[in-house]
Image 1 (cartoon, helix red, strand yellow):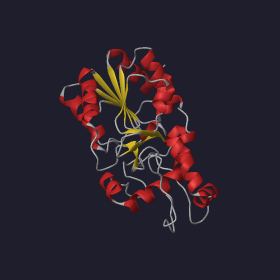
Image 2 (spheres, rainbow, N blue to C red; image 1 turned 180 degrees about the horizontal axis):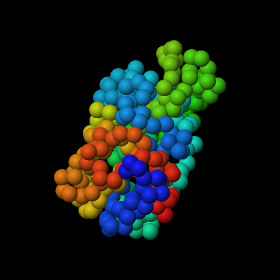
Image 3 (cartoon, helix red, strand yellow; image 1 turned 30 degrees about the horizontal axis):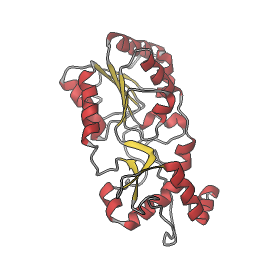
Image 4 (cartoon, rainbow, N blue to C red; image 1 turned 60 degrees about the vertical axis):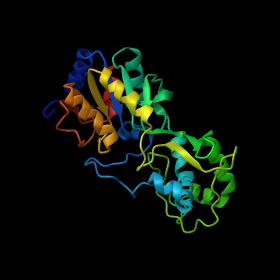
Length: 283
């Protein structure tokens, strides 16, 4: 929307919501940056930081699990302390007012629920839960954090102090960019019910979204008459597919996103600004 100021762009976006009765919203990490949770990618869609842990590697390698839980212990406080921002709250209010019909999020931070969104699918799971891979018991991540800190006091103290050997930089999935010199003495959590292997209740890279969740999300897309993308570069196919489906069925697509997206050629209306700045204006 070159040549238009932000107010004019918001007016066009407001008209988009008025013209379409059942707008499906797809959100990504860019929505949560105003809550203090960093984004995965830069404005060109290039991933920041190291390659994320792959699900199959996590399950087959104790060393990978040990590294994950050590880094997660350092990165978790950022997610635990995050609160919904004006963008999350605006989406919940737009849903309550009937301006949007449903919401699919690629985020795992749980902020949509806390803001009050109800017709919601968390495509990649929720980092606030931890599941036992053996007995399938679901644990609260906050409880696991308390155990980790008590079992690993030296590492916890170093991470909190920002020591040279442990310099935490939180990631959007609760992991952290830290350098760890020695993990041999790190104590990993296990299931309190059966002693089994614990994994965060999220979809790792290399894993598939559960079929029932995928089916429910695709049904939302089928029922929608328009798609609004918020804070996502759409570089991951699980999000990009919804733009492909919308375009294939002739449903218009709008986006609020800083920088390029994988679906720029499919998007008819794009506002290049932060979600926390644009969404409240739609109210």
